Amino acid sequence: MQLLYVRYLAACPVDEIQCVARTRRRQRCTSTLLSRGAPAGVWRLVPATAASGQLALPAAVMAVYDLSGVPYAEQLRWRAQRCLQHAAIPTAADLAVADWEPFEPLRHHEHIHNRLPARARRPGPTGRAHQAARP
Ligand SMILES: [Zn+2]
Image 1 (cartoon, rainbow, N blue to C red):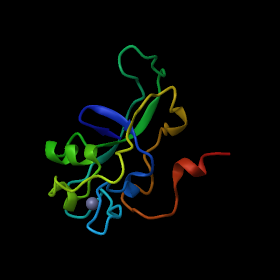
Image 2 (cartoon, protein in one colour):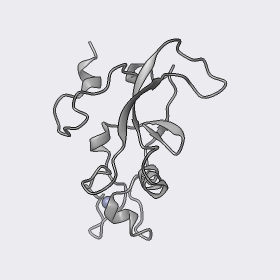
Image 3 (cartoon, rainbow, N blue to C red):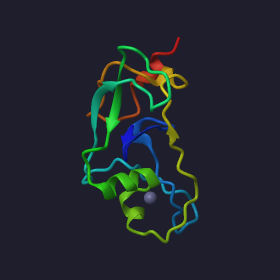
């Protein structure tokens, strides 16, 4: 995933990334960040190059869920890992920490896919490409 000019590895598929805010019932919010009515990112194939100073994988492309095109405030919302509702309530405490991990092509090479996900427009619990790809 790319947001705020940085590539991150999410802990789960894009459509399952969950809000970290605490609800009034003291439980973690179950809303996902991806929601109807909010601007969505686009899946793109980008060169699988690393940040400066790291080795690049030659001639490799990878699928990235790119949020660069959405408004800055929306990218901040994703980075803070909050749903639309909790993004509007900054005083609500976080129950969990955002679990973005800076993406490193060499360390996270098993997450590099050189094709766009077939289910990109069809969120659902089935067809997790990165799991199916494992032996
Ligand atoms: Zn929430």
